[in-house]
Image 1: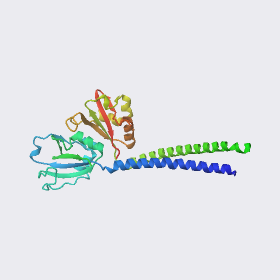
Image 2: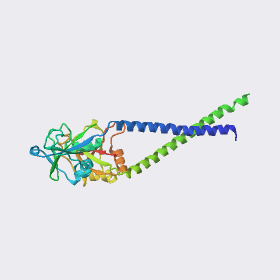
Image 3: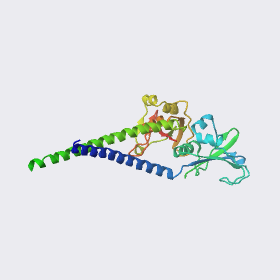
Image 4: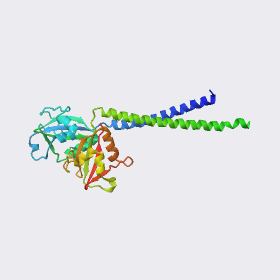
Length: 147
Length: 150
């Protein structure tokens, strides 16, 4: 083969492979950076507590329906699913250290789910007039924490 | 001597042209590979057991500086049946205005596929350049669409 043509073929192959490597590296670096930034901050968490007694007297009550559980799968998983892990009533490990409260469970949620839960059930820490959620005769309240 | 020197610039030009052509072919190959990988990832996500959700929030009032307002048409509802179900169908389940931010409330949500979640995000999600959410207007109310990608 003509040495000139041979050289051209080699240069062509190098150019082809070079561009592939360059673009692939740029894509990989961008993807890794985005994944690292979004993964490093952790995810918010949903916590549910059950309450009883006097606190329910004047409170707003939201009666949970099947539609609520369908639209908020994290809530479903804590109240009646795989993340339900209730602690005894007498443990004072709840936000208010109240014997009339007990921990029901926790589940990770996305930032979108967090804002949806806050709008639906007023679950942010600052809320003074927090509603209680009723399901199957038990009363719950929720909080969504940010990492 | 003159005749010996003449072919050199032409050969260089040919080499440069070949490098550019092969580079372009390489670029197209990578683009095709990425498209294929994207389709493969979507397919893998659909069979992963994760459940994306579409959520719609209603805004009590919208200021022009908060982003673009887009009127929803029957065409939007026909193209995105999940959006139809949440805004005016069986998945509508509005919360009280008093919970969370008082000028915003939850309207409804439903299960969607990963492909639908992406399509809804592309059509009604935040503007890629400004990051501002689109406000969808329907019968005098303003809505914001959010989707999850678990």
